Structures are given as C-alpha cells and as structure tokens.
Length: 354
Image (cartoon, rainbow, N blue to C red; front, side, top):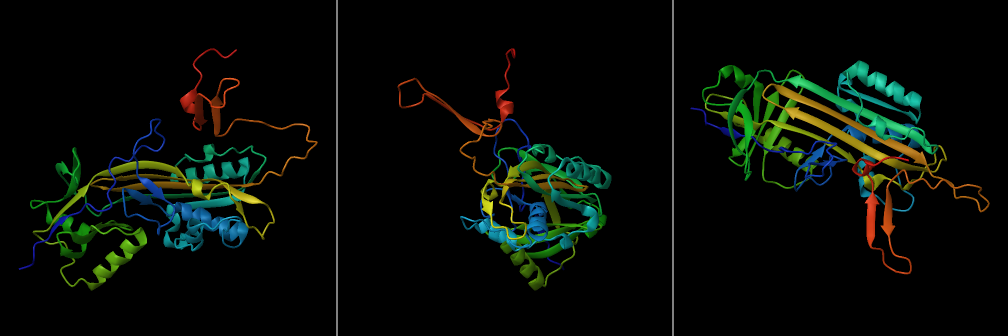
C-alpha cells in the first residue's frame, strides 16, 4: 500500500503585495535584481527581465562588463555573470530592444510589444525622452499566460502561517476527481516540513517547495533539485495525496538606485556614461486555472554633463527632478522646515494658477 502524502504547499508565497503604483506607501514584496541576491527574509521576488537589459548593455554597448570608476559594486559583479539569458526562454515569451535613446526607439518598442503581446508599457513614459544627456536605452518584456493541464478544485479558505485573515486556496482534496492527478508531479517528500511539487501546464511548470531554510534563491533552487534527484519514493500524485495552494496576485515596481548615478568605465564608445534609471515591474496572478505573468525592465543610460565654463552665459537651474526644500528665518542658523520632493503627484497645487 502506497504511503499517503499530505502536500500542503505554501512555499515562496506572496499575498498582499502592494499595487505597483499605489499612491499611499505600504509594505510590499521586495524585488531583487539578481537570482543570487539574498532572499532569506521577508517576501522577496526576482524576474529575469532586468538581467536581460543588463546583458544587452554589456554585449552591445560596452562590449564587456559594467565596472564603476570609483567604487566596486557586488551587485554589478553578480549581474556581469549573466546567469540568466534569452536562451533560457522561448522566443514567443519575451521581447528585447536597445539603441540610442530616441522617440523613434520608443515608438518601435511600443509597436512591437503591442503586436507581439497586445500590451502597453508602464515604464517607457517614465523616461524623459527629450533630455539632451540621453545616450542609450535597453528594454525587455517577459509575458507568460498559461493554463494548468486541468482546472484544480477550489478549497476552503484557511489561514496562512500566522495570518489573521483567511486566504483562498485551490488544489486536490480527498473527493477530487483522479483526472486532476496528472497536473501534479511530486518532486520529493522527505517530511511534513520538507517537500516539493510541480504543477504542470503544456509548456511551463510551477515548482513549489515547502521548507524552512533561509538561503538565496539560487542556493534554494540547487538544493531542491538535488533532493528531487535523490528521491526514490512515488513521484506520481496518487489517491490519498492532497494538494493545497494559495491563490496569489501582486503587482510591483522598483528602481535599482544602487546602480544609478555612477560613472562607468567605457573603452568601447569613449563616452562618459552612467545609469540614470534601472527600473523593473512584475505583475503576477495564479489561480486554480493557471498563471499570468508580465514583467518589464528598462535601463536608461546617460552621458555625464561636462563642468560649466567660468564664462557660461546661462545655467538651467531646473527643479524638475528630486530636490530638497528648507525654510529658515533670516539670521538663524537652523531651518524650521525641511522637505524632500520626489513624487509631484503628492504636491499638486489646488489653488488658482496666476
């Protein structure tokens, strides 16, 4: 008689991620730029789109690694390894483009992603396309929309970890049809605290690994593959097994500030370049029928402004980017008001403009 396996799958779960462009700040899933970044605490996220734009910058602009002139960046060193590449995706699931930053490039990208994915960009309008210091722009979109081999049953809502609110689950219960079994592969089941399964679709799979380990994504992934290779038990989902997976949805946006505003060593084009914006989005939804994922990444590279000459006739003192504002009384050494201005949507003038 085959051993009954109770699979309550809940690893790597993200529930109430903040909507990407919410006006009020709230706790959200942290997006990581590299697969090897620390994912040992809180809710973390990684998607390969940012690595794709970094690869294009290395291969097609710098023709070598990204190295900052005045500091060593561990993050840049990890990205330079190019551990994720286009070859790891099917051609119909991604789009990339790079070139000199221009409105023509913007139009090319917008047309391409609409024709290929029927999508519009959430990032391209965040670029100031008229900035005279613009140099290069790298862009990537990844889109996945697939159905599981079978539609899973909707289960009773229950708590997750120590959550106060119950969450919705789908899966396979005792009374579920055996037709659902083929949609699940058991990778291993070593204990009630250490197991992994794979939810099947025609061309993709969703791997879920229940563990209490605290490591980087790449180390966790290597560990689960080793355990799957060693496992000698039943790898088919069989009568008596149960599956419980939470419905999940989140939308996220980030700019990797750590990589920005640092001059880059550049022997290829001799230009004084720096990364002005390094942005990424992730929009994810998983339910009992399948998964939808869309992720964009943009890297806007600019040339460094030359120092102004002593006899410069005019200086553009534009406060149209992040700035600080202080107020103080004359003759006093300390200000009584200080403000950092970044998102002007928070400061829209309500009075009459004269």
